Image 1: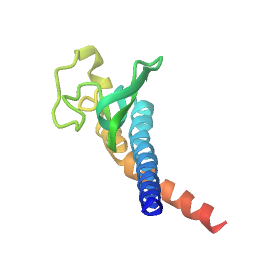
Image 2: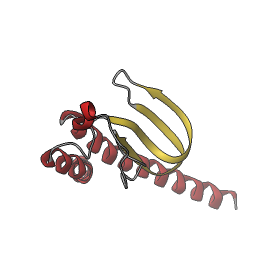
Image 3: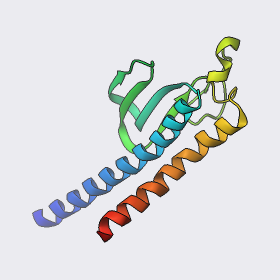
Length: 131
């Protein structure tokens, strides 16, 4: 009985750890390409729900880990919510730093970067396993 519980707990911990790594790499792809293209990120979160801990970097981005480790998000300047489903008015002087005010190439690169980073991660993992 205890062995079965320990095995289940170990499997669950491995799943949550793998998911956290995949989500972090994915969201970091969005974040870093947005930053390179001049779009300002306000929040980088691994997980949803109540914040467990956080820190603000020198660029003003709030980096946080939340209680439910089943996803994550990057909230950009002007986003109404974590899903970028809407936008809030942005000062015209800072409009270029918002996702909606950025040029098409910057928006495309930012949105595409998450899946591309996951694809690169999978290549690295399989290459590492093959070595």
